[in-house]
Image (cartoon, rainbow, N blue to C red; front, side):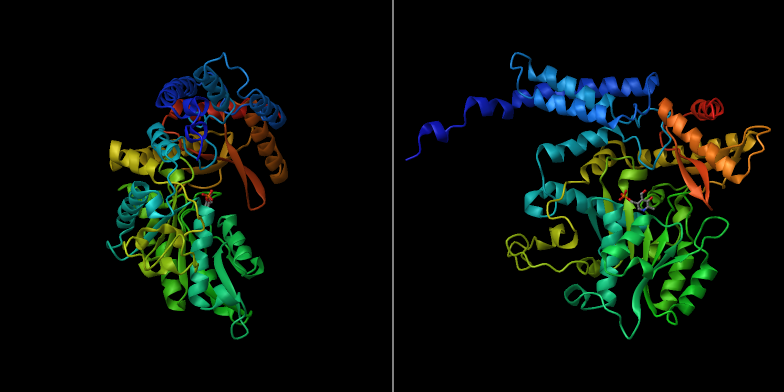
Length: 497
Ligand SMILES: Cc1ncc(COP(=O)(O)O)c(C=O)c1O
């Protein structure tokens, strides 16, 4: 016989799970977020806080050591202090002076929708564990697949935690399909030829990482040089493919970038598709950044040919303005989505499940066993504000980048590295009468970026192109105006180097 003392949850525990506690904290959360967005938009503070990791570790550590000690203080008050700390010392992507990486200021509502999945802890790898969250993922996948141009029912898509993971998964499927027993026996040379993957020299580093992970070996990644517009040079791709067998390589996949990370350049996807078809190799599109341009009538031409891909990586947490991580991996042929993994876990997935729900279990097709309901944010803003709203954010980012390009091009003391194909632009400051050589200019840009980030008002990045260092912006904040763009150039001019 259990004592009722054990059977009944103590009031001490119950209060933390009480609806009233959630209500109080959620009200505080609303207040903290409103303050945060107000400060970001007033652009009165820093965009990026001082980069002092040890000070933050100490603050975080002290907060934990004080946990639960001050019982006189209402938890809502302490919650607000902690939430404010997290927001204040974070990176303020919602400040219009943020023009850094390909990480957007999210539509606030999308973050709030995301919270629902966390608050109710829905596990989206198994339909039973997140019935609605899993269904939302299916609905979003269907809608995105149709934007790609694929017929309903022919393709498959799966949500996963990030573009890196999606790229690895796609190439794993391609490997398993080409080398039928590699999942069980490991990867071996076939007919004396080593498995190899082809991509451009500007593709994201995770493609090389995939080669390491999948047993292909990074030495078997063929990096095709880029042309003047920073796209994969297709003539060279053809030539490298022609000679690959003589080099002892069996190229089984080619990866196109839509777009590349350094300059935002789009490979000729239709051209790569033709090469893939001729050589009977898997065509994967890394559309982590650029697949989202499919939303925009004005800009979807950038990814023309994407519909020919065997698989596509699409990060919603970049240009669809929803919180990370929210990525989709698409397969043109629905059957291929089952090829990446081969697991037997009857306690979790039962293909013979009499309920007939197995098809809705994503877990057999993703790395993750426990997976978040990562589609709620996108589904939420799509359902609340509509698809055109999302498209308008993309168009706005493109228009702002065009303006930035004009400003830089018209400024005698600045130089652009390329014509922007999307919302990424590389440029450099060349002060009048500076007489710096290429190395000197590189060093100057690095110093400028360091100073800009340390000053904290603006946030930009940098990259190396052809060995030289250039400043790099991703113009991604819809609240960024011409005044901010011009302000950044002035701030750069005013750095002391
Ligand atoms: C072209 C490209 N592919 C893949 C990735 C990696 O995606 P994630 O950060 O979602 O893993 C990035 C990130 O910037 C990218 O630009």
